[in-house]
Amino acid sequence: MAGTVSVLARSAAAAAVAAMLGTASASAAPSNPPAGQLWGNGQSTQGAHLQLVEVERRALKAGEHVPFPYKIGSTLVVYRLRATGLTQGKPYDLWLHLAFENPANTHEVVEVDARGDVTRQGGPVTLPVMNYRKGEPVGAGLISPDGAVRAIGRAFPFPLQATDGPCHLTLELLDPAGTTFGAVMRGFRPGSVVETVSRSGREVLRSRHTVPPGGTFNVDLRPAAAGGDQQARFTARGPDCQVKVDYAWGAASMAAQ
Image (cartoon, rainbow, N blue to C red):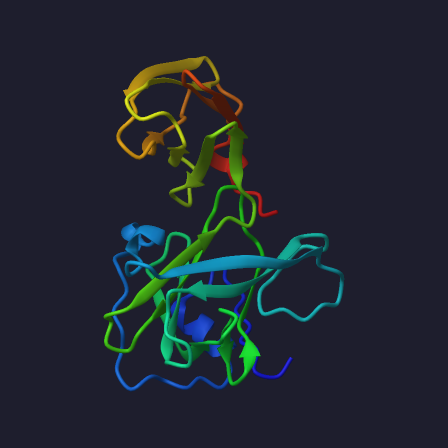
């Protein structure tokens, strides 16, 4: 489709990402992203939001032309970008944040149309991704050339998550070796006590957490039980709900989907 920017976001250096964008139109001045470890919706300008909306998911077939190696049957996921709270028709730099890498400026200048779709030269911006692991995020950002306005969004092509009533649990892979995960819990009753249990092999770790105002809190997980099969389970139980996620760690977590 004319005007569409295609980005294959996985295991790519910033230079390779820029090269795949084809004809890039650099902005007048470079914008500055938030630090990689802070890249997320909380770093958007007040009132600005960016969504990665999935529009396609399919298995790759033999003979398809893509820039990176893949196995037949591996999954291609395509996102479109949709923004709110940004000025229609004004230029923004498109940034990408690949897992375990620093945010990278693609040097593409994009706009937001009347429907909130992010476009380049009148066509929608799409982000095809593949070779992703379970719990591995992809991020995108729209940042004004002066850095004053930004909308940051993230998605998990293959999420590790669970929901029970108002409560939601998401596990995020935090390092390429698969030894650290971040558990983000939302929707728990503020002031209540939540019991968490992390199981890996013969190792069982129990903790109690008082939910802060807003109902969201984080826990870092490092499942590394000797003699285990590299399968783990994390459970969070509050007075209103219980959520749990089974996941693989270490070498068992490295399989691209």
